[in-house]
Amino acid sequence: MQVLFLGAPGSGKGTQCKKLSAKLGLAHLSSGDLLRAAIRENTATGLKAKEFMDKGLLVPDPVLIDMFREALSMPALKKGFILDGFPRNLAQAESLDKLLDELDMKLNAVIDMEIDTSLLEERLVGRRSCPNKVCNNVFHVKFAPPKEADVCDYCQSQLVHRSDDKVEVVSSRLETYKRETEPLIGFYKGKGVLQSLNADDTPEHIFEQILKVLQVSV
Ligand code: AMP
Image (cartoon, rainbow, N blue to C red; front, side, top):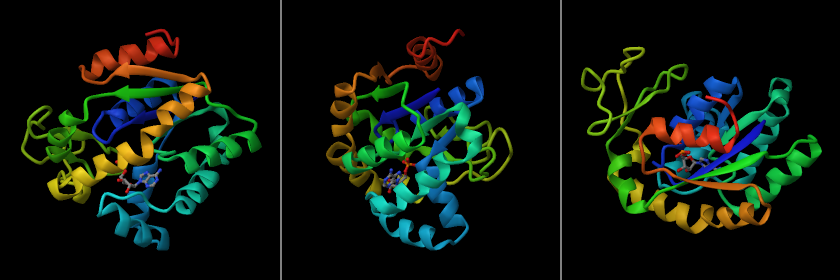
């Protein structure tokens, strides 16, 4: 099964992709996580990406397209995958179509996590992330605090406040989403694969909705 998640930053798509990946045993390909890994490893891609990410802007399309061409061609992905954060504009969506054609694959569903963007600034600014790439859990100072302040409940790493979750970058990320990514809702609606659900709900209830949409038994 191949599933793509759409949704504004802070809509909770990362959390849901993680749960779905564990439930179905499918690879979770998060563009943000791949870019942050490249930054940690100090690669040329990472250095280039950081400039854009720190401003809340999209990293240039060729970087993402090359990254996903390589990722989607991995034999381990034959069973299927969950895409999170790619594509993020129409040019990337068209490139993804071509890539999937070449690989003889298609998207079974595109899940749009709908949420009023006025709720997102508080969600993003209060977010604290586990930097351990195996754990990678996300908390929130108010809505989902860790048991001990700034310490991951699962692996005890020191939580970080992502530089692009700082208040001065968040509004730029939300504007970028509206301008560049939101048009993908119409693009995938036109292809008849779009499933929209209300993302202003508990993570458990949202997950139930996702399983229902994908016709996966609980
Ligand atoms: P995320 O973790 O998905 O919120 O992504 C963090 C940042 O990585 C974004 O604000 C962008 O700067 C960059 N990024 C992630 N995915 C893409 C993409 N598909 N195209 C361009 N930039 C991206």
